[in-house]
Length: 62
Image (cartoon, rainbow, N blue to C red; front, side):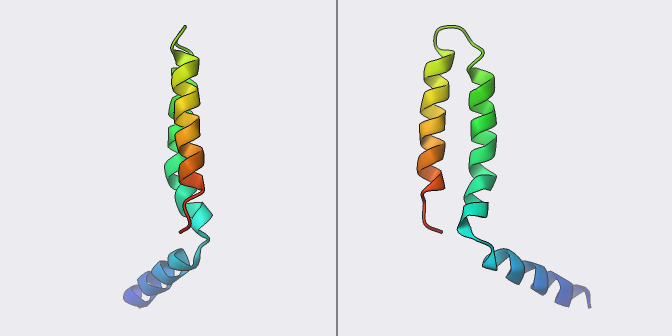
């Protein structure tokens, strides 16, 4: 029975929208960028670069 539950869980995960999978990667990136933006002078530049990279990852067709 435990194996059946695991198989069902894996199948449900595979059927999720790809957007969900990319959010698992980009949300921590965006949080890190928000923390970095606190640093004077270079913080906003680094935040913008991280945010741009996260947007590109969000557009990946999974």
